[in-house]
Structures are given as C-alpha cells and as structure tokens.
Length: 350
Image (cartoon, rainbow, N blue to C red; front, side, top):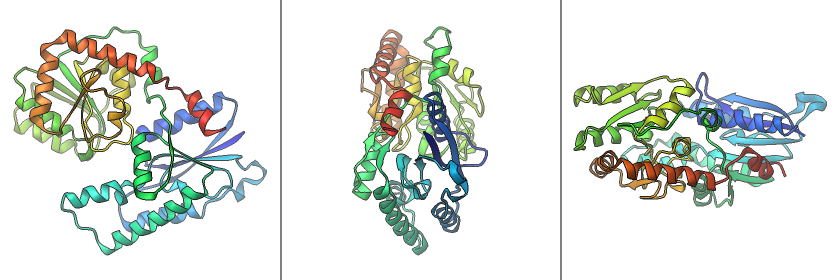
C-alpha cells in the first residue's frame, strides 16, 4: 500500500513529534508499504501565520502526484488534519492546544485574548469538527488527548500507545543500571515543562540530592539564572545537548527521573525512565504521564508544590533499596503494556 504521512514541520527542531513520524515511517516500510511524507512548516507566532498555514493545508491535495497517489493518508498534527483525501486516518498527537485546553489555562493565568484570537479559535474548532468527521478512523496517542477531543469537540477516538523515541537505543545499550545521586530531567526548556518545580524542590530538600537537566528552549535562561541566584551551581548541571547514548546512560545512572509538565499529551520521558528501571516523580496535573505512573509503586504522583516534591526526593535518596525496587516495578509495568509499532500499524492500517 502507498501511504502518505501528513504532519507539520518545525524548522530545525527535532522533538517527540518528529521521532514519532520517523518511527512510524520506518514501521510502515518494514511492513512492506511505500511511504512518503507530506510536510508544511508551522509556526505558532501570530494569527496571520496560523491562518496561512491552515490555508496551505486546505489547498493541498494529491492531484500533482499523477498515478502515484497514496492509498491512505495518516494525519498526525494540526493543521495537517485538513488535507483532502478519500482515505484519511487521523492519529492525533494533539490539536492546536492554544485554542483548547491552553486557552482555558491562559485565562486562569490572567492572559487576555483579543477579538482576533477569539475569531481564530472559533474557526479552528469548526474546521476540526469538519476534519474529524471526514476521517475514516480517529486515533490519538493517549487517553488524555482522547479526553480533550471528547470534551471540546464531542468526538470519540481510540487511544493508541506506541514505543518511546529511544526504545531501540535502550534495548541496544548493555551497560549496567546504577543508583546515582542525581535526578534526571530531560525535556524541552519551556514553561509548561515546569523544570522550575524540580529546582525549587531542591532548595527544600534535607538531603544533598542533585539534578541534571537536558534540553533546549526559551526557558533555558530563566533556569540558569535560578540556579545561580539560589546558589545551586554545585547541585545542578544543565546540558543543552547530549547524544542519544549519553541520554540513555544518564537515565540508567540516575536516582530517579523528574517529569512533571502541565497536562502532557503522552510523555516519552516517562516511558524511557521505565525502560531504564527508574521511578518517575510527576504531578497529578501532568496529563498523559499519569497513564503510566502508578503512585508509590512505579513512582510518585504529587501536587505541583515544591515542598511535597522535596519530601519525595529525600525519600528516594534515603532509601535506595526501595528506590531500586520501584524502578524494577516500573520496568515490569512497561513490559506489561506490550508497546510495539506492529500493534500501531494493525490499528491504523486495517
């Protein structure tokens, strides 16, 4: 079968969405299908740029593909949902969150929306309704994303889990797992990822717990300033780039993994921590992460407050044996999920 994968492009940025698209294409190819990507740049910088991107996808079709048109189109992200094809399947990573759950979140934070913002929101909700109702099947990457689709659009969908980006790297790495003295926190440096909660918790710990952060993003300067301002230079290391192998080794040599974003869609970090046999410290409002963390069995789900998180960090540091057992529980829990790309294809393509 000829399959087109329709998704957006963030110029010179590689993250979870890019890993998913790439691994989906590899899985399709290994299953004997022909695969092509259909991509368009998308930048959430202004109402005008978003509308231009929407128009570009709505005008896209496969008329110039001649007799090599795809048999099926798999759409992953907004506004790729709007491409025209008779056999369109949506596997939604997320919608345009700024006009859905993050619209509500921004208002709670005191942000004012303009009339243009409101008009764009109404337009996207209407277009999403049309796009999802013309799809043959609708899947999402998590129960959390499905919940949003139902809540905001009244659309039913099927959650479909997949292996994390570095799953194969973990399987190929034969180095031993150690119980270190640092909390590993790999994720983009953005406010919604909330690395500041970890740094604030470190200030309150009674034990000399350390932290290693890894990522890139607009919040990096703020995090570095926080470390210096509060005298945490001896306890916090911030990396902006590590090789995949080094990321895996940091996972495997850590005490535990911190991943407490606000309302995450899915969260590769959680699953990769489980593969590394490490407990995860997260928060009750962290979304998809909580679909995998079992409180006090494979990690901790706490309120997003530094004092509660600090207490758990101290607990992990003081009782290494219990921490190790929790990590082994996490690995067993990952195995019980039976995550595979074959399972993904069995749902998407048939």
